[in-house]
Length: 340
Image (cartoon, rainbow, N blue to C red):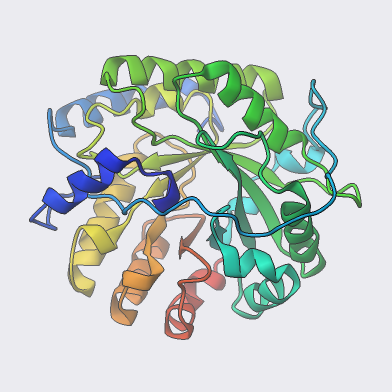
């Protein structure tokens, strides 16, 4: 979804984008309500283009463990009842990937800092398609989950699939949902990061994304709340993104509304984020927009982002990622933290 998930071709495409004015842009309720969006998005989506997305980050170990951790069962247990609520997606969120070395090295300190900044939900990556295991460093993730829960935070797992091997992608998504810490704690939700371009053909990629979403929904049942981390509306690198078809299987959008790669200045941020939210609102699904890379955002732009998501009716928001979010950014996100 996020910088660590971007492929090399996506990063190089970002470098070729010269303008930042290209506006790129649930299953709760009757799925028939998403059909009008087919017209909206079909008209709005450009035929070609490249995604000005975040650069790839090197894969590197974040924490060394000496003893094996409990593995997810071959046939994961049913999801916990806590996953049948939208609450984990509400309010201020923050993001931690498997590459967030400094954060994962001190789970207790990180969780306390998150709480102090008003964070309600930690979005924690469990794996991506580049890894050799279904859950990366499970002891480290377990420590982070338990530390966050001790501070009163919700924790939502996320996984980045490739769509080239749907059996592996489904197994890893289910492993995150079935994950338990040594104390028996589980994630409070799960979101699938729908962004990889390993499958080069866009029609084939669309079919694979929809097929994986359908299989995941069948695996967890109708009541489990699933999040979809999706490209911005009208994403240049994925024209014709199947928002409406995916809306049948998910309950909340988490669009990568990375204003830091598209526009400059608070006024432009308000317009761009607002346009993204308006495009997705047509599908009658709750929205938790992910702002740009925190390390590239200015304070006034963060404030504009926070104002825009509140005015647009989002249920939550936050920047990527925790380690890059400055004290000034946290102060400007105070309005999001105060959201009910």
